[in-house]
Length: 245
Ligand code: SAM
Image (cartoon, rainbow, N blue to C red; front, side):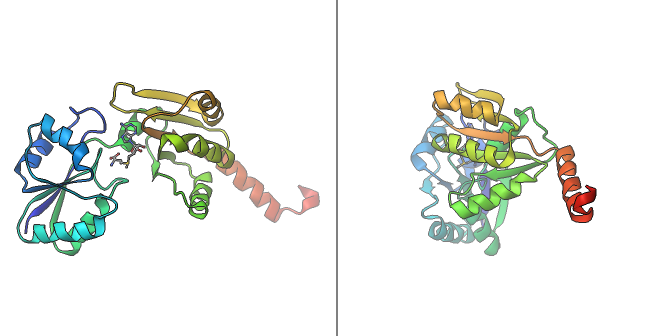
């Protein structure tokens, strides 16, 4: 069978691509792209004329099956998505799963990824972090995830669409309290902006400034001191009779 290559592509700046990805995109039999029109710009820039086919959220199940058949018949396929590393908050994961199930060899060519690039610029702790991608839209699911984040001592990384940014900041502020956060916009692009702020300040800021472009939001984890202090209170409430507290 052929090999499935997951190829990381730029998250804004066309030059952020590896030599290996360019060579692989030229050498494979077929490129599966999330949005062929969007990816055409990249392929033209690097004079890559490999055939492209679309593989996206709405056709991924059937299309993955088709791509796996092509791989089984010996074709080498590269998967690219609109930006960054395939399978991170995009349809890539389905194809990887189906390829493994069919015994296909899969490899990943590393490169840009918005969450990692954002984290490095956050100025917050990078040692332990939890990537939450986009918070779910479904109310119940969203509530469950946010509840889990309340006690999280790791740095939290979120992706968010501009028109949902303010609402998400408000909900998180209500649940987590005021925290240091870094809002990163348009990474690697001309209007790359890094806002090191807090929930309160940011919510105030976006009252008078429209959010535009692509965002990564990074939130300081709960401090161990705060977590300890809360545990202590709970312990005292459970074990020490009311009149002795
Ligand atoms: N696979 C991609 C990756 O490796 O980062 C992520 C795909 S996800 C559908 C797109 C989201 O990633 C955007 O809504 C935004 O939150 C974030 N993102 C992608 N490019 C970005 C950029 N240049 N600056 C800031 N955020 C970006």
